[in-house]
Length: 420
Ligand code: UD1
Image (cartoon, rainbow, N blue to C red):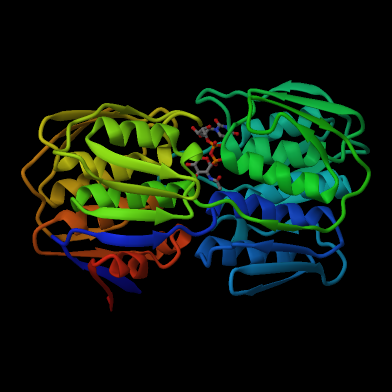
């Protein structure tokens, strides 16, 4: 296993390029199961989660080639309708093969994904939506077994205790593409990645309206065909790089970043003292004066993303004053607090709130990554800390950031890999 070592204290400067969106490409790859015809997807980031999804597609009867950011998916043999525990348990997004398989073949057997370090993560909304389309669903030996003689379009409200669900919206929207008649999903998730999936499905021949808003309407079709598509930029990677510019008092021009996808993040970073220049495909970020404390509450899109909560917490650790960070999507997503405190931060957790008292500086330490975004927050802390920070278990980082250390090194960071 590798660990990441960072010698902090360098102001990052220059240009960095954002990769294609992880959360966009994973359901889009699952959607290729909805046709026998070839699909070509461009701008695909080389991530551990993408490799896992390609393995899942191959296990379901597809051939999936991945060369230099382009994935080509073709039919290899008879479709397989069971997604195995070994693969699904490693990545929650793989559960979104359920909607495509059920929609197209009227039956599917998909392992339940299980919990993970950031919380329990149920799938009740996925199942509620699929049942509303007429599917009969049983849980058997850890698998969701879904069947339908035919799926029928219907009206449904898909909001949950914590608001809308991204992957449930994906799953239900994909199944509804093959349902007879019209489906209306109210309280659908509005994330740009949902809209990207809908655009992909429309290119395949689906009839979808309202994607990117809380009400999605789908008119069922009988068949989809192959298509080509380019994945949108990863807004969380862009946000992480914005935080990297600020925490190092640097100046980064972040290319392939779409500011309309980052409204809440830009707003909060400006409030904390960032100077942000937006152009059509890039965002330039530097410190205006001195960082100021901010209060942040995570919410479904277009609110502040939970996937940026850990990174903004890193930034607040060295911001003089008190910042309060409230997590409303995953109330237990605070594994990074203890690690940041090991680096000299002063953070106290009170239920779903983290109270951050800014300190003068962090000091490098040996820390452990617990999940994807927590890893990114430790990288940020390491960039700002005095001395050497060594982060173990960085395979979490490889799940969602393509060549992050190369990108940071290109902007001047002293960061390298070592064998544990
Ligand atoms: C997606 C993202 C993940 C992000 C999350 C929230 C992908 C591949 N992953 O995950 O990076 O952190 O959105 O923005 O896109 N919930 C239920 N019942 C359900 C489903 C979800 O109660 O059936 C709850 C969850 O526990 C959570 C909230 O709803 O509290 C939002 O979760 P959800 O949007 O489903 O997250 P994912 O789609 O799994």
